[in-house]
Image 1: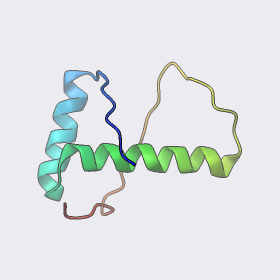
Image 2: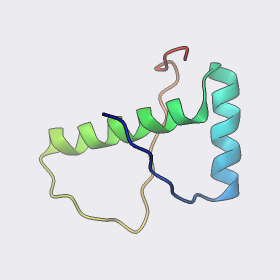
Image 3: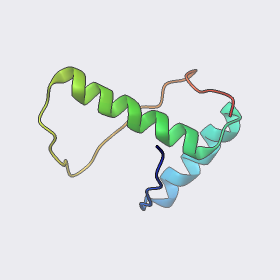
Length: 68
């Protein structure tokens, strides 16, 4: 099941995501879902306790997006 989550990001991050989305030919939401999924999988694999950090830096892989 899918759900919608709303959150705020800095304008510069939004612009960066929009540029990446245009380059990849996908929607911003596709990139954001991939980033979140990869981060959560990384947490699971590292067996870390889920802490809420002050800032999270998520790296966007170059060629890892479906064309939808």
